Image (cartoon, rainbow, N blue to C red; front, side):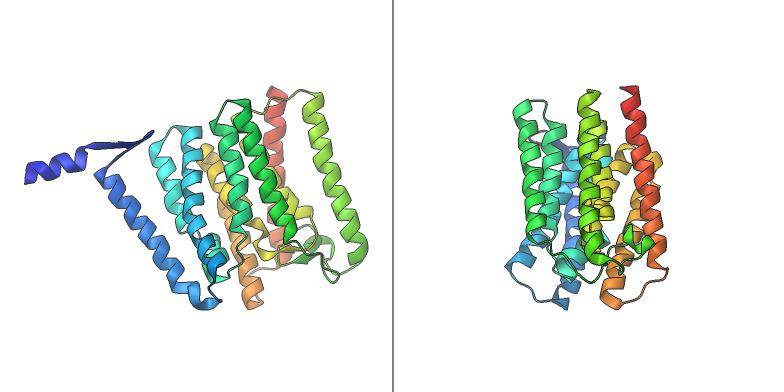
Length: 295
């Protein structure tokens, strides 16, 4: 019996490209169970419907995809599993789907499926499939977007928290969209003009940069607008451990935005969180510039 248990514990199991031991599987079951229990503890805060249940299921699928992405970048099995383990208990993911029922994880899921196909496959057809998935996520996000005529942000501490979010709202609504589109098209022009290669590392940097930039400059951003960057920052940190402060700071900002939207109060002024996001945006942008200069 002892010999049987010893063989069971040390034996390597393989499903597709995935190799794991019995202890790995046991740990995965335990952390998945923990994620389920955390969601069940808050699920009654809002009405539970099919979309909310679907969002909670997608949380786990998304965590698995992100683990795959991390493994592709690092070839480190423990980092991939750690990514999955962190994401299934990530506060903002639980709050978004189970607690609040905002279901923005549907759009976020397509964004990361797009990144998954773009970085894991060398074939051009697969890369186009990744871009298509990201486009589907963007279309869904735009479909639920509602422009406010009273405030420049709806809970997310973006740039307008610094300059004033309730002044010249109608004017800034138009100008902000034009400025954001101008920045995006300028970036596209520079990359095409200089023929900058979109490597796997560059793709991840750009993904995180855009995930921070778009909610930071776009108008009427709700409190959960930072969910994509929350998850992207964790993947980025797994690839570049020296950037450990990026997911930590972004998660603090994001969860504080949730707390402000739910409770109407926060420990620090919202303008401070907007400054933190600006610092993270600059930090990520500098990384893109340096890598582009090397290329």
